[in-house]
Each structure stands twice: as structure tokens, then as C-alpha cells.
Image (tube, rainbow over all chains, first blue to last red; front, side, top):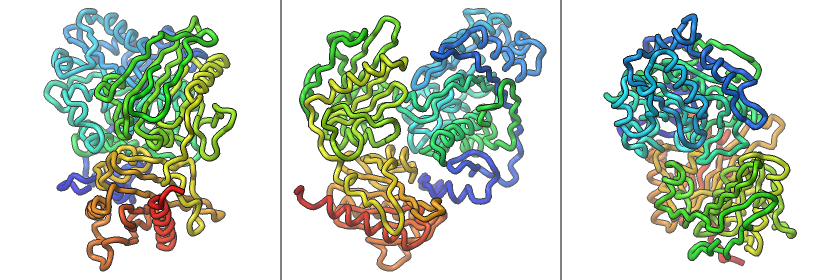
Length: 293
Length: 306
């Protein structure tokens, strides 16, 4: 990349891809290789249950509740979901839930289930709020739980984890198009940094092509929750799933375009987490068939 | 539904009810300034073409789900075609008895019908796909296209070479565009607008694949028609600076060059207000042949309409 001029071209990706370690990028391998970079091992939890959606894609709240409990229990290494939530937040926290409300919105059932679990873990109900919105929403919280839905995006390539906080910047349009590589910096803003206790991706019914409006041909029942505390690692796993689904649909390579530069740059430029799949341990529950990762 | 004052074509008479679905008598009009509010910030696609306004109608039913109808009134048929060309997937459907020749004008899949009808690009989406909703969606589609003209595709699209140097056009990859955002969605070149694309420009990009038994070799052709030769020259300089700076050291490369870069052979060839670009060609000959064929298309596009 010509950092001085700020011009990023296809050639930059090809150059950086050649000989790089396996990861995620335009061509399915990482271009964010940084010799000497300290490894950032990360864990990502993937829980799937094919009973969570019915034939009309409606959510079974009971199944979802069990999946959510299993997800946080695996992530936190605790014996119960209640203990797991207590390891993530405290009753004194002002907890902001940050779902996505457009393109492929987060299922309301997931937001409701997380809220109920937090209350069950001792967080007063009036201290759990919906925090999607402007910077003041994040400022008002001491803890954030990111609840994006898994989807591609026509301007940023992928529009799941990193993009979920775009409105916290106060200037969302500044992070589209050529500036999508800067999405990671939003997570480092003073009113956001360090507050995210959990990234929980709604992968019940993802969208693998980019919109700007959802096209049902590119949605499928994946029946999953994906979680972690490293937002870049979770995004990298999401990207792998979307990429695999696209190739399976077309029967040939179908790279996400524009390339999701934000993922590698969140690692390389902002040190927000790891985008390298080889540094990510995926712990799974549920069927491996169709997991795509 | 009211006629558009500026987009091509007559008024569209959407049925008030059909097979259990009904809609309010009034449709919702979305002007360009309100597109981001309507689409939660995702309106750039439509504004990247020459967009006039959007009409929205929502059909409700008793237990069969909803049907959303969006009519994007564009400034020209070419712009509506461009929106459809972003994705040629889905099942082609004939909405008129006399089906226009050439590329599909309506594509259906999983409850979504997309239509190019003169200056209108339409999306009709059933929230719940069923035999009944499919019938209703197609009936609405037929109402949309009834009595409307079926202009030819943009000349650049119609004139794309079918093949060059043993490389065959993949019609399902041909995307007509005016914006670098749309180009990057079809084929990533640069996050910056180094080709000087805007709504005064018309462009098409498509993939070409080898007809040889290995079937794995491919190249990408991009044809751009600028409003005038000066704009074309300025854009070409910008492209060379941003993408192929090595061409400045080569003699006689101001208007044409082919060079080997990281992912194959890339090049360009200017012709009046048009410029042909090629990317990822596996060899110099393929790149040169595709550029030559592209320039012929650009020149033909300048010829008076017969």
C-alpha cells in the first residue's frame, strides 16, 4: 500500500498475499503478515443447533437459550451460564447491548435472551440498555456486548463485528468505501476502548452477499452463535464462513469484493486482535456438517 | 402510482389487491435526499447511478407474509439496466407474452423478483416464499412492465466482444456501472477513485475465460466511456499513477501499454473519449487482444445509432 498517498489497489493485496501465511483476505490468505509480530492467540466459540430455526426461519427461544448458555459457558470456562455471565460483567456495570438494526438485523430473540441472562446473573434490568446509536450511547455504558448479525456488506466487504460500532464514531460515512480499513479505530476511541466484554455474533441466518438490501438467495440457515472476546478473531472466523458459503454457492472462487480490508487492518494497524486463523482456536459444539470453518 | 416527471416511461399501475394481498392506495415516495434514511445508510448503490426517486408499496396479507415493492425510477434505461447487471443470478422470467430478445429483463429467486423495465429498476420481495406469494410477486411484476418499452441494453454492454484470443465472455459477470464503488463491488481495482468514474461516465466490466481444456485462465476487461477526450486523458493519467506507475518509464505509453504485474498482464488503450483496461491476463497476447477488441466496442459505441 502507498501509505503516503493513501492509495490502496488490487496490486497491494496481491503483493502482500504472495508467500503469506494462511489467513483471510481477498484471495483467501492473509496479507497482514508482520514479521516479528507477537502472536495473539485467541479463542472463538461456535455453537450450532439445527433445531433453533423452524421451516419458516422462526427462532425457537428455548433452543436459543440453551445455545446461548453453552456459548458463554464454553467461552468463560465456567460451570454454569450464570457464572459465565458473572465473569463477563458485574451487577454494578451499566451494560449496553449493541445489536445491528439493518440489512440483516440481529434477531430480537437473541437480544432478549442476552438481556434475560444478564438479569439472571444479577445485573439490574434497568442497567441493561440498547446501546446501538451515537457516541453518547457508548459513553453511558461501562460494559458493551456486541451483538452483530453475520453478513457481507457491499461497501466494506464484511459488515459484521468491526462495522457494528460504526455509529459510535459519530461519523459513519467516514468509514465507508476507501476508509473501511479504519473501522478498527472506532474500537479504540476513548468512549469505546476496553468496554467490550463479549462479541456474540448472530449466525442463525447469515447473509453472504452484500446488499445494500438483503437478498434471500444469499441467506441460509446456519443455526449458529459465534462468540469471543477478540473482535478481530471473531470477525476472521465470520469472514471464513461467508467466503466458504459463497464458493459453495457458485462452485468457483467468489471473492468478497471489495476486499474486507478492515479485518487485516484492525490487526495490523490497530492491534485490536488477530486476523490470523492459525492463531485462533475454534471451540465447537453442534453439527460439524455445514460449519464451513 | 404517479408517473415520474423525469424518468423514462409511463405511470405504473400496481394492483390494489391480488390473491389475498392488499396495499394502501398511496405509495410512499422516497426522494434522493431521503434514501439514506430509507436504507439506513446503504443508498449509495442507487445514488451511484442516475437515480431520480423511489416509490415503495407494501402489500399485507392475512397470514401469508408481506410483499414489498420498490420501484427505482432512474434517469435512463441504461441506469436501470446497470442495477440489474450487478447480479445476473436467479431464474430468468418472461413478464410479457412477447419476450424481448437478448439478456434477461427479470430474474426471480427465493421470493425476490428483480426487473429492468425501461427507466425503472424494480425489486419485489415476498417476506415468505410460497407458491401463492410467487404467483403474486410475478403478477405484480407483470403489472409493472405492462405497456412499458423495452429498450436495448447500453451500447457498451451489447457490444462487449464475445471472445478474444481464445477467451470467452462470461455474460453473467458483465456489470454496467458509473461509480468506482460499483466497480469495486464487481471487481476490486482500488478503494480510491483512480479511474475518475462518476455519473457522467458509462462503463462495463466483465470476466473472460479461456476456452482451452484447462479452463482456469481468465482475464478482466473494463471499458470506460468518459464525457470527452480530456476527461479520458486525465483519468488515464490518474490510473497510471495509482495502478501502473511503471508505465511512465516506458516510451510511447501515454495512450497504450501492456505490462506484467503481480497478478498477470495488465494494460490500457485509449480511443478518443474511451479507454479499455485489462487486468489479470495470463499473457501479453491475450491482454493485447482483449484491449483491441475493447477498443472496437468503444468505437462502435460512438457510431450513430442505426
